[in-house]
Length: 241
Image 1 (spheres, rainbow, N blue to C red):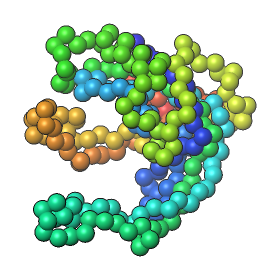
Image 2 (image 1 turned 90 degrees about the vertical axis):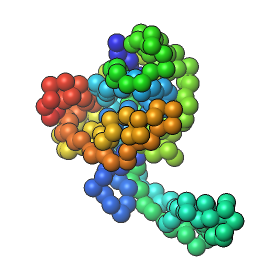
Image 3 (image 1 turned 60 degrees about the horizontal axis):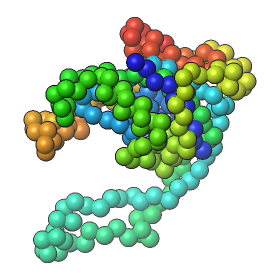
Image 4 (image 1 turned 30 degrees about the vertical axis):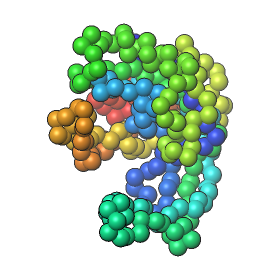
């Protein structure tokens, strides 16, 4: 059972991990970023999302921006100290910690996403849980735009402006500039981040879970052919697109 949706946004930032100082976006979204977007609408330990196809409808346009950010974050130790009344100032004073950081973003993006989900066999809320139940819930939440956190295009400050559930993609809507690019080797890209705990609490307690921060990044080398990235070809056949 697969789904097809179209997401649109004013800006997107799918950060390349090799760029250390400034943020620079991939040309197209990595599958892992789209999995995170879908989890904003619905997620359970019992399922995992699998991206099958990505359609790039709009031209790939980059813009540069500069944002004010903070060099530091609130110290947990100082917060605990303040709560116990033993002293410590947990505040961050923006006038002292402010810095500017440049980013290279994608602008005016529109992507088609074809995906399905698989059962993980992990903890479920009910014993009678099945794939049909999850399919119906996902369909309803996507159609109604129900989410428990704002879905974003790479970074939280770049939210999805519009999501549409479709029966099929109209490839005639792909911009002529994208079509003219033909077969594009997108180079090595992040596929997804795999956490060592595999979604299972390291303390074995689902009611008060603790998860591992240890993770590795899986990479793949996709091709965009006339605006279509066949991700399924990679993850199903185990080859580089």
